[in-house]
Amino acid sequence: MLGSFTILEWLLLAVALQQGLFALAWLAVSHYLAAARRSAQAWALFCSIGAVSLVLLALRGHVPDALGYTAADVALIASSLAAWRASALFFDVANRGKEQAALLLLVAAAALALGTDPARENLRIALLFIPVGWVALRAVQGVHRPMVGEFGTTLTWSLHVPALLSGLFLLAVGIAAPFMVGWHGLDPPPHSPARILLVLGLLAMASCLSLIYAGMLIARLVRRLRDLALKDTLTGLFNRRAAQELLEREWKSYRQKDLPFCVLMIDIDHFKHINDAYGHAVGDKVLAGLAARLREGTRPSDHAARMGGEEFLIFLPQTEIASAQAAAERLRQHVAAWTLEPEHLSVTVSIGVAQAAAEDEAFDDLLIRADRALYAAKAAGRNRVYLAATIEAEVTSLATA
Image 1 (cartoon, helix red, strand yellow):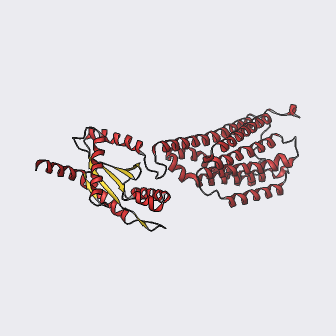
Image 2: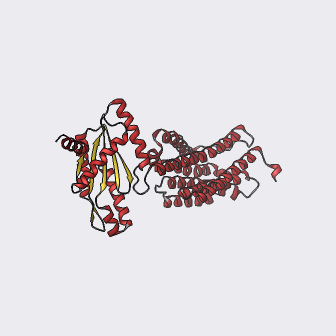
Image 3: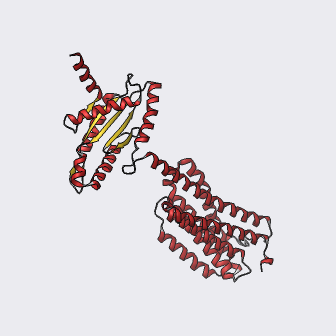
């Protein structure tokens, strides 16, 4: 039988083999990469079902028509549904399982009812093109917004415009097919360049889909690795290393452009007592809750970091000391109004405020001044804001007295 295969059928088998290899690769990814397990498994299902469909298409004329036509068409629809599910899982959006199951059952029932009669070829084209086009449009609609948020507008539209156009084209052809008298579907002679180019295009599209998915997965992993290196795992804020790098950049900008720049050093009052009385699990909840309130109470241009333990730092770029003091007071009040539930635990913070000054030779000098203001606030009774300038003025007054 193999010797009687046409070039086109060999090409279909080659694409099926490629998809089968992709399926094995994605199964390996799902085994070793827990963060992408479900979406990788769905993508492996897309590749494997697609490979089955292509094998059945290649074997048309060599196997019963129920396999070469009906089963091949249903497998192609199932493959597109698996791709839709994979994209939904990747971006953690609703995968519309009921809609997908209903669509697959409807297509399978219609395919069985149509059978393999050549006179119904146009109806089979409609049955194939309309669901695939619908799936393409629904998949794009479902993941567009989260994809823009993660990968940006330009990349998202560059991928989604071709998918939308393809989906609309398939819908248009599928809707028009039953009314095109004398047209026998997209079925040119087996050796025609059109069919060979169509299969080569299918090969390229299948490769591109897996490469695009792999590229997005790698980009996400790189971003997560970067976050692990630069962010505190408990609070999601910058860690000390990232804070120092950011402060150095702000410091250079301040020196070059003579821009105002302030920092807030924040410490949770009586945090050791919280850990001792309630346990470290509650202490972690306090840290995470405080981080959330710092994000709520700062501007998008500000940056919050956990410096270690119960100590936090906020960068206020292009901010004068009066504005920084007001911001610190708002933060203090915002935290004091918060109660940790179900422990009914009230939390307060002390804050030291410092503005970069000409006498600061390095950014560490700014941190030292903010830290002194923080400890002055704690020494004065906690739950208050102190300015580094106030401490320095008091020291100068004592020295000259």
